[in-house]
Image (cartoon, rainbow, N blue to C red; front, side):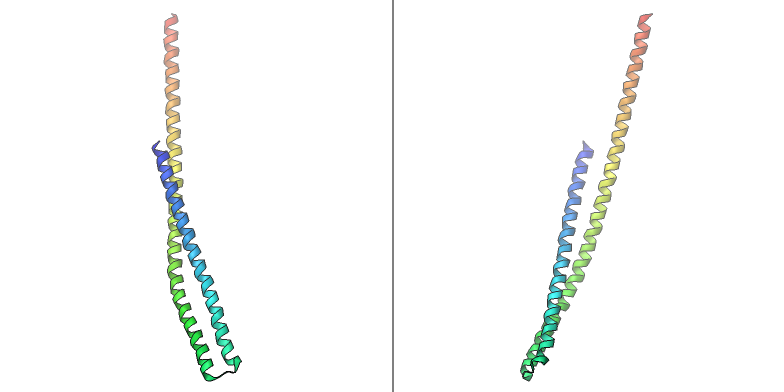
Length: 139
């Protein structure tokens, strides 16, 4: 019974770790998509300014906008590094939980095997005692 409770507990812990890993991985992917969109907008803003042939103020505004996008991208890169680090930690935690759960399952299987062996030996002993008793009674 204890092994069953422990097994359920470790399963819940592993499931939580797996859910945490999924959330953190999704966060990294969201940051990657946002970075790609910002880089594309930055490229478009930088290319269109000189091509428009507009006034110097328009070019300055376009480059300022591209620069602000580049700064936002740098901030996202920092966020991505932190998100990747936390995702790797969650991945390792998930692996540890899975290993612990498997180890507990092996221990439980061994314990059940020992219980079954003891029960079988006791049953054999009881049968032997009954046979001896029955044999002794026939005389």
